[in-house]
Length: 353
Ligand code: NAP
Image (tube, rainbow, N blue to C red; front, side, top):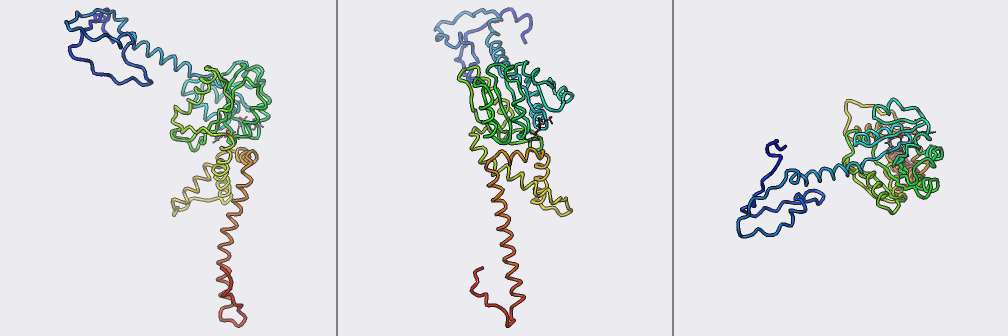
């Protein structure tokens, strides 16, 4: 800060040596005021010191900080989370920390928890919609998504509200949102590929899949969509733009497979032992990671991803193939023990193993 004695005027001397070129400020902004960037070359005679007002001198910095503040303001969104369960609350914590205004609605009254995050909870969806959020975030279970969406009085929302879903399957909500919402609404389908367990220590480096299904061709609507995606980018997520169909094909291979194996292992009631190997500990963690999600979520992965049935069939085939290999080997040993040296032993020398 300038002291009061120096704040009224500042003396600027013509430099005796040329200025070193400063690197550009982040975002392309230059650190010099525009009027000073194009000063003519210094005259040969020594120039008299210029007197300029302190207010003028401070302006470039003031302008930059104000511009940064304005940008922050524009990035701030009013987000209505519909489905304020495990995952909705998990997302809300980060949204709140980033300074967004939060509204929430759910089947169950979560008003006490919402209050701890500074979010307003609405039991009546009409009241929620009348608050005119910028973004409605659908975070309800896959199985209930259609009924919940249809229960929202969307006519009470602003005419071009942005709808985002975070369901773990993507083609189903894409078709649902496109067929249920007015054509003026924007739609982004997303899948944060992490949850309260796997992202306990932050979102840095974790994949965030999104498909800008419909974003109106106007600067304000594009800026709103970018501001929403920026929430995840700021946390360090790996942003993966991908069609909903492509997501579902990959997710059957990765997510549904992982959850199925986790749930199968859980049936075995595995326990920690004094001689756990690293591999076994990975299995125990897999059970924890997958079974902490609701069965509704897992069921949704199966019911609403057309690729899941085929994956389940392949998993069954894989288990049968491994079993067959083991039992074939066992039969060979048994046959040998039973018949070797015996006059009744069949000739197995031509049998393919
Ligand atoms: P979930 O069991 O899939 O969903 C729970 C939410 O759905 C709660 O808000 C619950 O309402 C609501 N709900 C369930 N049945 C309902 C019904 N019949 N009518 C109205 N609302 C109903 O568990 P979740 O983990 O919170 O997941 C929410 C969404 O996020 C899902 O679509 C899931 O696929 C997606 N997702 C989850 C994760 C994760 O790691 N958990 C990661 C990425 C995406 P109440 O609040 O009233 O109980």
